[in-house]
Amino acid sequence: MKQMIVSCDPNETRMALLDKGELVEFASERSSGKGIAGNFYKGKVMNVLPGIQAAFVDIGQKKNGFLYIDDVLHPHMDKQPSVKPNIAELIHPGQELIVQVTKEPSGSKGAKLTTHYSLPGRWLVYMPYADYIAVSKKVSTDQERTRLRHLGEKLRQDEEGLILRTVAEGEHDDAIASDLLMLRGLWKQIVVRAERQRPPAELHRDLGLVERMLRDVFHPEEDQFITDDTACMERVKQFLSGITSTKEAAQVELYRDSEPILQRFGVEEKLYHDFQRRIWLEGGSYIVWDQTEALTVVDVNTGKFTGGATLEETVTQTNIAAAQEIARLLRLRDTGGIIIIDFIDMDQDSNRRLVIEALEKVLIQDRTKAHIVGWTRLGLLEMTRKKAREETASFAYQTCSVCHGTGKIASWIRD
Image (cartoon, rainbow, N blue to C red; front, side, top):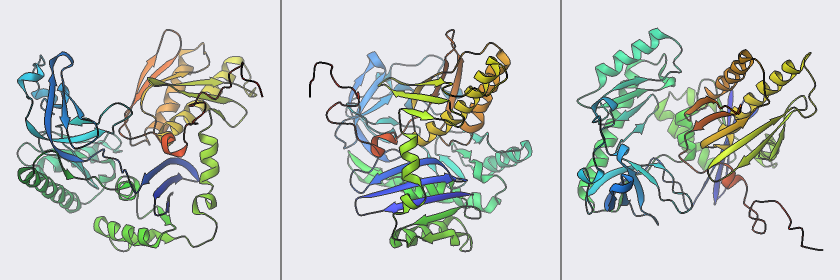
């Protein structure tokens, strides 16, 4: 059973997801300055730069959004030209177009944009022009994947594309059809708004943090939702009643104790442990987590662990335990981009495969797509993880204004 713990105050909403008591996700949303990932805008092309095959689009934010050539071509790979055309042949300065934000602006970079539109629902993801059907790889049986694929082909119209989500497994055809009808209507509303408004204009805002998590990970028949805010509780009940039966929506509870809700469920203590640079594992081994601008580096160490009968066995056990914890922390910290893991050297290929299998087993529970590239010549494991929003650390902790995150004191400074 999973528990969604939500703490609300006038300035911020914080959400923790516990799976069998273990903290697997944490997110925060401020009342002011909400994220824009997933939002739709009517934008105006300001610059087209053939040298980098990209364009900059004004969507009404502080910085223009970035639109790459791949996000302008047809979303179906089979319908893209074998040789990419010059982006200047496809769009031009002054052109108005509908774009969707796929990645939040960060630092000096504007938001990443696409014309490969997608609208996620409870049971499926609707793509108005993708022209293909896909079924989540996490659906457990070939028979169910075939059923969902045939249903998608039956329901879609014209060039529509559909992705049947994992939660659609075993769901009734009528519920999936109803979800599609709702998303199709939402897309038509976006198109109508785009015809009526001048750029830059917001056409559609994605769901807020709580509703987004309910849509994506909450199972009313199994999971529990607990909040310390009456208004949030009522909003959640109303939202769940729209996607499930009233009976199922009864899994919502109001927390009334005087002790802060995140403290009561041990979330604050877990966050303190999981966001340290050095993270100790059961048995005495530990990992060191370093974040750079370009990538994340994780170092695995045996520490005090001496468990195995041989050195190879000790190292393998340490690496497997570390792989499981690293996969959980990638999801919890919402780390994206390039990730390099320095596991302890192993002599046997079979043991290296065991480590990757342990990593994959936990990663499959992660809604964000991750890809394990493989081992380098130096014995490092390379992987990537998609990133759309700010990492959890950016709002769980603030960078020190004195050391700017280096955590060091200059040797020439005296008390």
